[in-house]
Amino acid sequence: MLSSIVLILGSLLFIGAGIFCILQPEISLLIVGWYIGFVLVLGGALQIIRFFQIDPGYRSFWHLLIALLDVVFGIWMLVSMVFTLVAYMLPLMFAIYILLRGILMIVLRKKKEKEMKHSSLYMPVAIIEILIGAALVLRPDAASIIFMYCVALALIWTGISTFMIWRQSEAADDSES
Image (tube, rainbow, N blue to C red; front, side, top):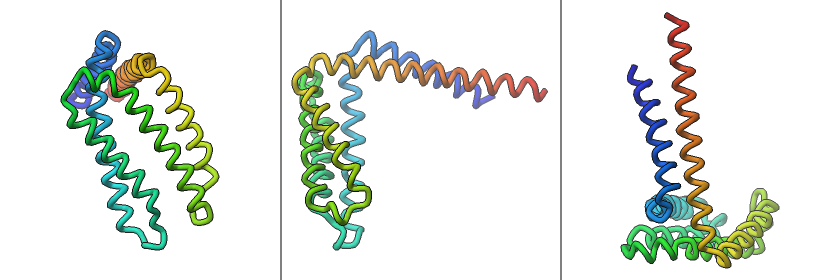
């Protein structure tokens, strides 16, 4: 019974959040900005901890620099209280972040190619990041709206799929009775 309530409630919350993103993309962008900031700070901090835990022979200054970039960009997103500036600057700052990350990945691959596992994957990922970053720099206004609509669709789809899981679990419970 409790799991059914949780699934229905989760489904409604996801669908409601998706509809909110469609109706209020600017406010949704602020909320997503805070969430992304938190994830970047946490991910960057974990990368820094990992950097100091691995054998010094395998450490790379470039890995540390990427982790620091994640932390700094994440903190900026969390503490910036100028809401309208964040809403309008977030797509541009995110574009610059992606562009810099792609460039740093190319530098890292060049410096550590022989020591890396799967070094051949770094170049295509870096090039994709650079292309996406450049495209977003050129059109941050369109990028922010498209981004929020994609988030909205993902939330609505998650809500629908959660509802379908609830329906399947209810059908299974009914057949067992």
